[in-house]
Length: 141
Image (cartoon, rainbow, N blue to C red):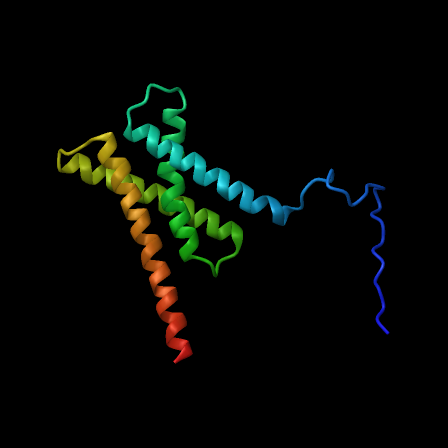
């Protein structure tokens, strides 16, 4: 015979219907998707030289979020606060090093800086993904 567990009502008296607020676990993928859309919009607006008031803030968001996400993906072992702090510091360092390198070589351009930061972030993602894939297949042998 199988027993059926009965869920206790919550203390605030609200029901379990669809009108309830989503839990914290449900909102994290939603926020990540919104960040990807905002970063992509910043990339597109920066590269097309659009005359939009959102161009500056969204391009800045892309310049900080792309390398920050690459650092955060590589630092899964740290606790969330340390991970976010190191990711932010790494993102600022990458952006400043790209700007300094472009200024030192007299090749400064907004498009070049955005593309360089995006390419370095994509390479960092691919590098850590390949490292994890290689480590995972090495264990299976």
